[in-house]
Image (cartoon, rainbow, N blue to C red; front, top):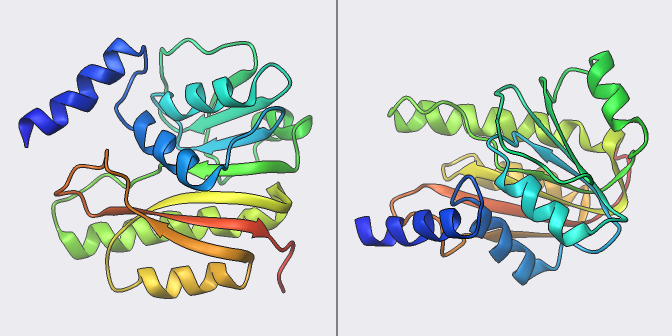
Length: 199
């Protein structure tokens, strides 16, 4: 198990990413083709910045990536990526200004997780709440036809959450990357083809 973790940890250091989570996004992109040149991408809960860096590389100079997190990071980002320390669910003047030139987004990605307590049920509930809040901002931020990726902790509420996304997207898929730790309860839900504002 330790060797398994070390492989991705060491690979991230070698590839100049601040965290091993970059390989989860890499696998998601390989499977679902969610990243493309020229896209505008929003990364929710972006610190320390691995997903923002990878997305910036994929969208190229014509694309733009905005990473937002309540935590700070000292990661250096390329010119086509911006990191903002803010609450992504609060439309502060700083967040609105940062989003202004990019709205609506082609892709919104979220690797957010609650601070885990070790109490399985509580962690699942808190994860679901973050996912629900991420879903609820989609109508104002995601373009019609756009895509959404969100991390959730496995539990009894995942099916209901997935069903709520089925009303908003053409396709909804669940995915567990190989680079997720085997003991991890995380899965990723991918919404493809946003249908627009749903009443």
